[in-house]
Image (cartoon, rainbow, N blue to C red; front, side):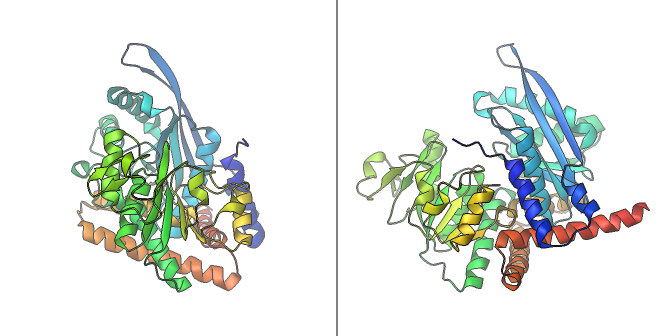
Amino acid sequence: MVKHNLWHAAKQQLEKAEKAAKFSPLFIAQLSQPERIIELSLPFFRDSGKVEVVRGYRIQYNNALGPYKGGLRYHQDVSMDEVKALAFFMMIKNAVIGVPFGGGKGGITVNPKTLSEAELERLTRLFTRGLAPNIGPTVDVPAPDVNTTPKTMSWIADEYSKIVNKKALAVVTGKPIDKGGSLGRTEATGLGGVYALLQVLKKMGKNPKQMTVAIQGFGNVGRYLAYFLQKEGFKIVALSDSNGGIFVPGGIENIDQIQKCKEGKGYLAGCYCIGEACDILNKDKLSGHDISNKEILELPVDILVPSALENVITKTNAPKIKAKIILEMANGPTTFKADEILNKRRITVIPDVLANSGGVVVSYFEWYQNMNNEKWTKKEVFAKLKKKMKKAVNEVWDLSQQQKISLRDASYAVSLKRIEEAHNKNQGKKQ
Ligand code: GLU
């Protein structure tokens, strides 16, 4: 299998944007590498008393628009190139959605599923101590990403507060509600994706009712996305997680039930639910099929949602995709070559930097509430999120129509223009 390099893809996207518009050479040079790279060696004790060493990263890509902002992921495949690319995508995302943040990303190369909670806490606190000189509410504000949770964030906030000797809630977002988190943050990425999709469908003049959807990934993002899509009348026909999935052509009845089944077993495969009874034996009654993570991408559906990891839509499977709309809830799910194929095939791709920006929008709301000692209701949070998603989709959509470019290229154009303006202003201030 070809191993795709996400950093290479990010650079290709930047080159493409650079060709399409005139940016100053200094600005482009600035964006071609991250501003700061932090790489840490993290030796920690396993519960057995054995010492293990893993590597941790934080990439601070660019802060022209505000403090660096982006998640921390714990995964065995985390690498320098991956986090560099993801930090670059965060920079683009924050600018296109209109939050006053630059881009950052980080992670630890570790499989958290092999660690106990005590081990995870020790490792996270150690990571925080390593990062402490370079993060802070007005400097760099991490958040959850793949395999990190509100609990992870609460350890970071706690450890960081001890180091600086004061309560510094706004050093991270995505915290538990009783530890300074915002209502609605957990659902935000999924719900934001629904708002983005609804707005694009409105622009396309399409009715969402009964449109069929396949979702790859049933983590924090995919799960809420599925839930809210179903509430809006979409028909969810297929779901998968890293262990495989289910295809129910007549539509999956109840997303909450699937969630309960997954929680019980630890994975989603075989969760064929009728009412509260979830059992593989219901498969035939539902005319269901077990499907792999690869197969889910090629199902005959209206909307395909990659909502797990990067590089899953490649030049090999892009020609076989049957969906007419792709909602990218994962970061970087489509390779550069695959994107060209999808564009040629006139498949509408709602790009990651737009589709999954709901998470960082509510992260901004959380940060704002922490900084200003406010507490917003969930209703307020969702209303503000909806407004932001609609505005960004409209801007991107209109530009894509005017210039006859893809929604991805339009997102990059909107975003880079904003970053360049801020960059020029900051340069002016320095002189
Ligand atoms: N990890 C999320 C993302 O990729 C959220 C980042 C944040 O809230 O800062 O957008």
